Amino acid sequence: TQLLEQSPQFLSIQEGENLTVYCNSSSVFSSLQWYRQEPGEGPVLLVTVVTGGEVKKLKRLTFQFGDARKDSSLHITAAQPGDTGLYLCAGGEKEYGNKLVFGAGTILRVKS
Amino acid sequence: GAGVSQSPRYKVAKRGQDVALRCDPISGHVSLFWYQQALGQGPEFLTYFQNEAQLDKSGLPSDRFFAERPEGSVSTLKIQRTQQEDSAVYLCASSSLVAYSNQPQHFGDGTRLSIL
Image 1: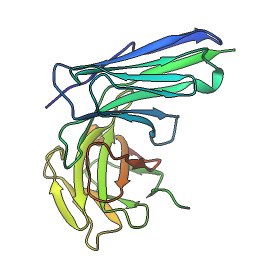
Image 2: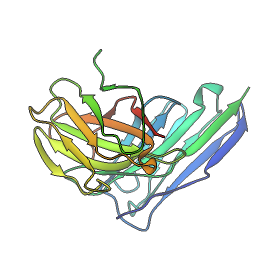
Image 3: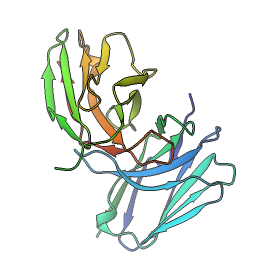
């Protein structure tokens, strides 16, 4: 089974600071998705990256897929309290029959 | 609503009892997934349906876990003779068309199962 390691596990920062969350594996994934989960709710998809080296931006969030498709990062610029939540990366193990392998998640707390 | 609906939201059962968890996917979605999320962890894959066919059940932890989707829409996850280690949030997700890795999965809010 392919594994995804996320770091850091927990991040507490002040409003306006920048941060980066990492998602690493020794295995190649056909795609990588980032989700955000609030307490008591299911994960909500933020972005999907499929091409090695791909960079996608979603307002203040920048997502990057590593060239070898083994790692990914999420960078948040000028974090706001509304960004608080659990951020999960999930890798698609194969192109068809998308069983997602999730990392353990990064809990982000942004203080005002 | 238009999203994935799961019921019940919370379920408390005594060890040894059987439980059934229901998932109503987004209308027309072909693919349906079940995940188990332990406290402080990311979701772990349990099983996958394409319409009524269960194509992957490699994540089911034991033969006490059983899932079905008889008419290709609503799905039920059944756990027999529950044990304390079964306590977790059970998430259901659906995806349109056939599940390719770049397609989004739409998650329900889960059922929180507590085994006493």
